[in-house]
Amino acid sequence: MFQYVAWRPLLLGPSILAVLAVVAVLAVTLRWRTAHDPMLATTALSVGVVAGLFLTLAKSEFLRSSPVVGGGLAMVLVAATAVSLASTGRRATVGFAVLLTVLTAVAVGDFATIDIVVDVQHLLEGGVDAMLAGHSPYAITIPNMYDAQDAARFYPPGSIEDGRVMYGYSYLPAPLLLDAPAHLLGDVRWMHLLALVAAGGLGWRLATDRIGRIASVFLVLNPLSTTVLTAYCVEPLMVCLLALVLWGLLRGSRWTALALGLLFASKQYALSFVPSLWSVAGRAGWRTVWAAAATGALLIGVFVATAPHAFVRSSIEWLLLQPARDDSISLVPGLAELVGPVPDAVLMLSPVLGLAVSAAVAWRTHRGATAFALGVGLSLLVTILLAKQAFMNYYFLAGAALLLAVVTWPRDDPISARTTS
Image (cartoon, rainbow, N blue to C red; front, side):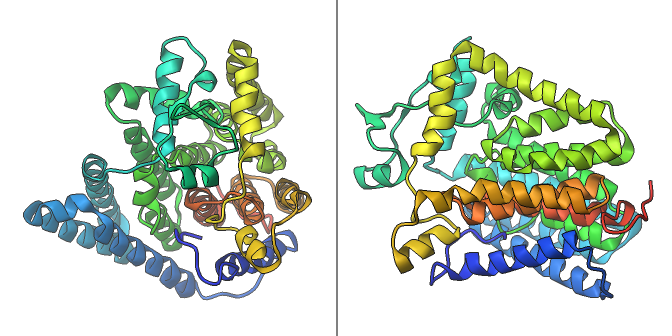
């Protein structure tokens, strides 16, 4: 799930993920319980961490730009990762803290040295500027950064006028609020980095076994983490919000409803895991769910009331009119290459299947934090596997949700009634 390039043939990678998704959904909903060797999970997660470490070092222009500083930071990061994986107790915690610190320094350095071309940057920065000025972020336009061929692949027909994309901010509004402080300080990605580090820290604190701690390391140091951060993706914000919800469900927090409301008011694909709210209600009560719903509805409602036509055009019409991307990491490009264009009726199955999986997981598991994380991760995975647009940042969120489920499972088992506080 933490791949970031399409494989050849195009159906290979998504087909493997589809099989794994089906097995995982069946395992959870049918409550399969089998004997397993903890070393297998420990080894698999550790291999993932090592891959993430290698790619972080290999892709970092900041580390390459200064052999002395870069080499020193690289050695410290390698040592901290080794201590986090191999040690226990206080030593492991210190190693993880050093890992987070060095990873933060590397990411900030990459922000300053990597020149990336992506329209999400203009959407976020332009959206925050408009919001702070009292205007609708959904009514802005952004510069077209692509040539005619790429623009035709990425944007709906007729979207470009005089070198500008005539659609505004295209996500739900929560990321704008969360990114505003970092934008005022110079770069919205600083908030994304802080969110990912915080999510890793929350996961580490919630973990009760070595597998959970290694999963927390993998959450922040995987093959996608620095790429997602550098590319302005908002998913790290959503990972942090999910981690806060899980923390609130397990430890008790008055802020659980706020984090939950912001999570669902972040991106439109959150619709696919609405049934997972049943799992939240089982642990925190329906009052928390209704408070979260009110929070999200109020936030979205303010932006709808400000410019209803612009909101519908940029956040709904835009998604419906966007072309099916041939670089999507889903089953769609491979099927199109094999049998021709995929009918819209098939593409509409994507959110339906996501909702079905979310509902099945919520219905068949013991309600709680782990069940909610599983519902989010598995429903999103199934949704994007049949989506016309599915990219690394979507899989990053789905994978992070499943890693957080690994973290919380020992204290909140969704398959048996055994739970600990």
